[in-house]
Image (cartoon, rainbow, N blue to C red; front, side, top):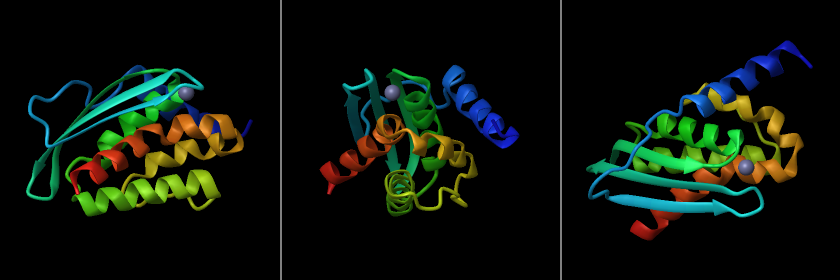
Length: 142
Ligand code: ZN
């Protein structure tokens, strides 16, 4: 295994063991719940908005390291972004995972950690679960 791959795996494991933005929000402006029955992943997100900006995002979840690390990183990536920026990040990440596009996002470079996951189609569902949940929450609002 390349040293770079090992480094990226560390990033995923770190987020899995120490998930960021963990918790629940009272009266959220947006919320979403997503499941990936194939793997047993389950994620919930709560978002508080300030105008069109994601002021606070909280999440809880259970499941594999990839799904939970993705959820944790998504929270960090979306915090403080506008909904439009958030949608763009989510769509770029999904496209990179599903179609093999460039996974380097200026907005949140740690997402590159999922590069190795692209080789495992079953696990791609784990990686994009929380992003799909976020996009669903956005669509329910509009
Ligand atoms: Zn999973």
